[in-house]
Image (tube, rainbow, N blue to C red; front, side, top):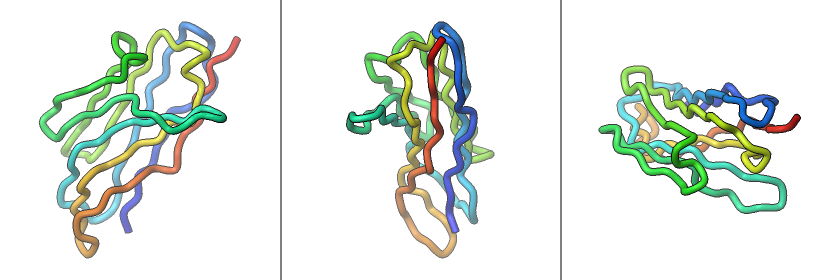
Length: 121
């Protein structure tokens, strides 16, 4: 069974920082591009940042200059360092993995269960 497990969410004051992690577990052969998405109450899920297997990155305008996405291919783990957090960043953050090649499962995309990030004083 393949799972994406996020961690690192929580409550932080405006201007603070959080680091999210997403670990891909299972009998993993390889993982394609990965990304972070978020969904605020009453809004659609939106892209925050993407990272390819080679480390190329792409950010939403709202994340540029404040968030940094990275990954450790050897550990099938992805990170999102979030600095200068604002109330507008409050949302459930989801990780996504594209083209996960897992023994017995073939190539499939997966979503994590989500982790809550709340920015409030």
